[in-house]
Length: 275
Image 1 (cartoon, rainbow, N blue to C red):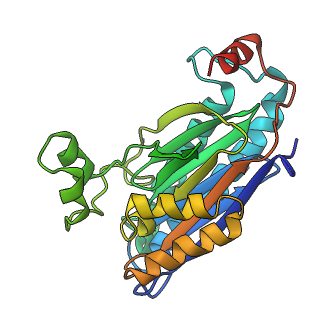
Image 2 (image 1 turned 180 degrees about the vertical axis):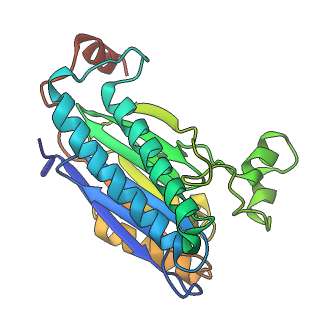
Image 3 (image 1 turned 30 degrees about the horizontal axis):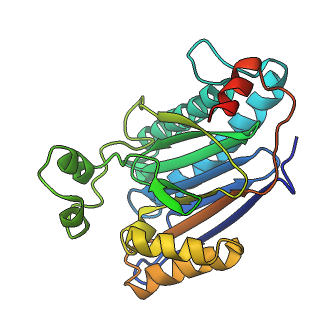
């Protein structure tokens, strides 16, 4: 089923004010309920190849998996929904293909990409990410980051070597500890959330949050919550006005109507009642 009229997706990507090319890639697919932001890295144009491969592989994997499993979707043996497991497997498949390509193509050696992705279904969403591309949520005026950066800087913050304020000024912001394509296998962080009408989810590459403090991102999203096109434009403009040192990608996703598709199991319905 498609989600036209039930979900609103707006995506924008920009090379920024300094970089000669854009190694980010974004995907918004209302038919699948899928959002992906990928921030590529590597040698000459290899980052573009990695991020482009990631979104293409994930989209095809999800489309095929949903079609094959639609009649049995619900809770899986892992405790996650089948949609969550499917999304995780899609990222892991993308990791395998990117890694194999980097090993077999000399011009792609060392390439990789971060990924932040979500699959919306049954008034819920599955969230999967690898690296330091982020997902935020704005709900009833409360703005919070709901992913945890896989970066050296975040590890140092957790260990108490930096405060979050000191971390913003650090020169080590872009040293990721996890990315698709770098190793033969990758651990994907997975979580699930209830998608409430009026929530706004922000998916972004670090070109946004490195340039724009969270309070300014929050203010922009709050101010333009009724017009996601303007909100996305303003977020990219803010990043460029503040230096635009990296590529900038922004996707905003907003449930505008309930979107239960009829395949929700009893446990999921009970979970929604108490969420």
